[in-house]
Image (cartoon, rainbow, N blue to C red):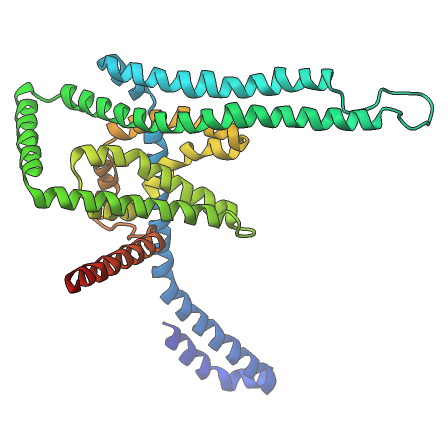
Length: 380
């Protein structure tokens, strides 16, 4: 079409020569050439822009699905009514992290520190004259004593309480995920028949027996657990380091923390269902938009409060998101947009690439040392 327009224009060039000068005709020809080149560029870019638009829309829908699944907190009430042990464990988490830990912070900020400031003032009383305060040395001692007492309160109460609640909460999180998984398995995520449930339970029990008797399967599971610990440890260090990057550090830190907590929430369910580690990582990295949306509500508490308060709030909210992740059917949710987009996915994002590289380097280092020790023992 552009060639036809250009040929028609060249036919009328002799007639235009009488009305326009040669310089104006050259400018007109060059502008037409530029427009033709620009239209060709736009025609080549438009399919790429369309693909980018469709991918971004698909990512946004998956992100919204993840946020919606994270906010399905009604599952906590349903599963707690089904399992008494689950209700007890969830209540213990609220009691330890909410009432005792956050309550201690409230008592410190609202009662203890104001009382110490009243008993041990750090400023001179207001005087009308411009004379210097005669109690400056005593007030400095009061300030030092007050700060020291507050630090003693942190050392002998808050930090031991934080370590104790961290260890005990991790044990309780595992129990909460286990009880919720069994409650979901007994009652069924959907309306299924009791015979189907019994058949699935018997098949799972036979699989577990085969795995327990198989020594190779036990060794593989131990290796997977070791690798998972290393992977998440290096990924946590990566999340911490990205917070110091200027300008974009906070945004990267928020996104990586969202993925980290989303993986933590779903890991309990994947462990109980017997999903292998490579399938977990492949599913997680292939559906990165969904898990980013799921992890965003989990991480908001860290950015809205002070570090110590955010730890307590996160310790309260985390078991709730574990329960929502246990009842979530993420594989079915992420499959729906793919049907609409004719099976085209977003593509896999290597979220754990750096952590995976560092973990493999550490494992290779330990394997080389063990081989050297075995050779030395054989030589002796």
